[in-house]
Image (tube, rainbow, N blue to C red; front, side, top):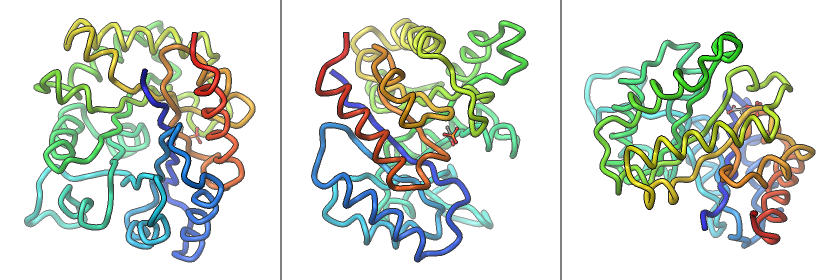
Length: 260
Ligand code: PEP
């Protein structure tokens, strides 16, 4: 049985250390010591140290929003795996669509970042997903195959088992549009079947595959209740502690009643 992972991607928010600390504090207080659902927060790099301090004593994981593939050297502006570990990170988001489409990040770069995360013993959250045009052209499976093959190239089954995948249809991110539970489940089942073909059934059964794209309190129970959806990567709704806690609560409800 996979434990749900609900992660909050704060993106380029908030704009002060004080506000970041207050948001983390709100989530920490609301969650308490519960571990029935795994939770992680992904603040901007500059707030990681402060949020790590706030989260002390809490089971909440700390995620970075990106990583560079080299550990150190002449790479102005980049942040490496050892640096993220040093400031308390447990997870790292890799290949978010805003980086793939906004900054031109390629599958080869995602793959290099994934290997750097694994080398640093960070839990990687690798994002994949099709654009609206690709879905309308019925190319979703083709695009995902290319992203999965390129992003996870060269991994052993054991390494793959420790990767979290986040299926995030680009057309659903920050738009208020959400894949229906049926649409999302169909893609998640397809992803798991690819994992099974490449890494074996036992590994595929261990991989946590999150859904992301306008997840909110009112759609979370249905999405998280799907058999192959193992959590959520949440953007907008992670910026208010109460909204994010309501999604966590949905995950706890689904966990308590068990999946079909
Ligand atoms: C995201 O940033 O990964 C995301 C899914 O954003 P939102 O929840 O706002 O759609």
